Image 1 (cartoon, rainbow, N blue to C red):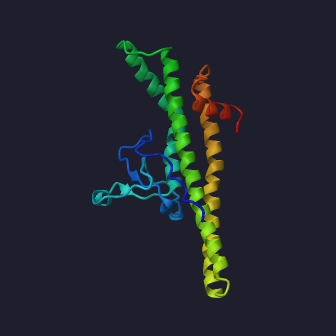
Image 2: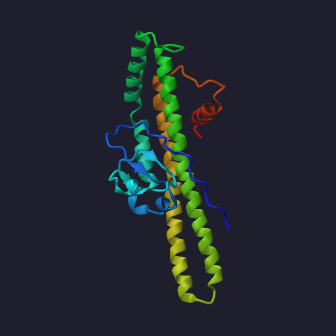
Image 3: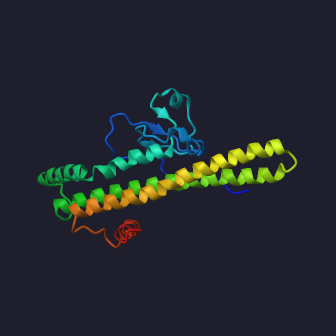
Length: 219
């Protein structure tokens, strides 16, 4: 039997997106199977496979939403690059006036900060998608095994085949998010590069360079 997919290590990481009412989102196998919520509820924080306490369940902000909702909320950062860069630049300019500036120009610091935010969001979104693909793949494999074990029961086989088809639809829908994600990342990278023309992540930051090189080569 295939091992269970490992939950994306999102923990208490918070999305840097405009929202006054952040909600807790529980990313679990049941989340990945819920296609009815692939719409766009505002969600902010991931708690994968979090064991809910009574207080969690009583909190109206605590909801289980589909990963594609999470994708839409995460993409808000990408959609607002110009606004966020202006805001971040102003913040670093204020720090510089107070004698708290870092290395490089205010623009360089703002670009580096925003790039870090972008990469973190890209990583989290990809983690959620790949996690859910693994969850649905495991479910499909279990149903295939059950199909073989119920060879003498036509009624059971029809039921399993229907469930297997439903899983295939889910898998295709979740995997489609990878294609959407590639388009969103490229659009974001182009917008970022138009404002931060001279920025490049340092060679020492291997992870950031990986995303940078992929975006430059349009992968």
